Image 1 (cartoon, rainbow, N blue to C red):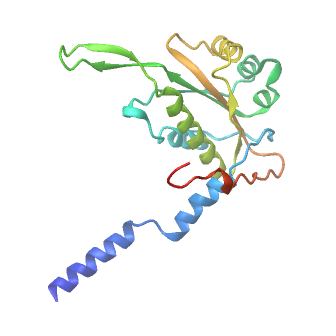
Image 2 (image 1 turned 90 degrees about the horizontal axis):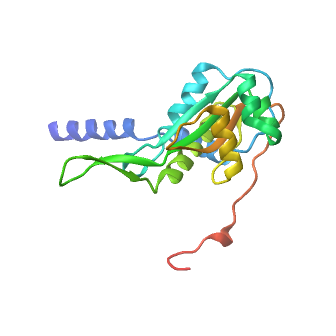
Image 3 (image 1 turned 45 degrees about the horizontal axis):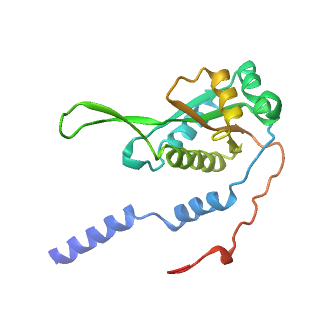
Length: 202
């Protein structure tokens, strides 16, 4: 009887810890529903929503756990105006803009000398991309709209962003993400293409 009770308790604990079908479905629905939203109402994005977006972004995978991402949250109209330039109407009109940046170097202790040494981080773009995707999915889950606007590796866009935001040396702007409440019914694109899949070998 004691053994049966232990088995029942373990089974119950595993069932409680396992993600429910509803939570799995919710996560997949968010992924499949994500779309690029370029126009917004003037309803503000709350401080709580903004923090959730940033927490989601920082939950992304990162090479060697360096976490090179840095985020600039922009809400002031004059800063958005400077950031947008001639090409960014959606940046100017969005209630919230998140600029995803990356530190391109990082420090590690030398195994032999124990001294801190600086080295290039080859993973910073991949890490920032993962953080950006997390942010976009969080926006979708919150009922917000967002769009990934490229910055890196375009010199003119990077230069304008650095100038508008006072970004220091060693930090590179990766992308700009306008966020807001959608002002129309946007629908996701169907990007499923089985012909792009190869099994075992090309």
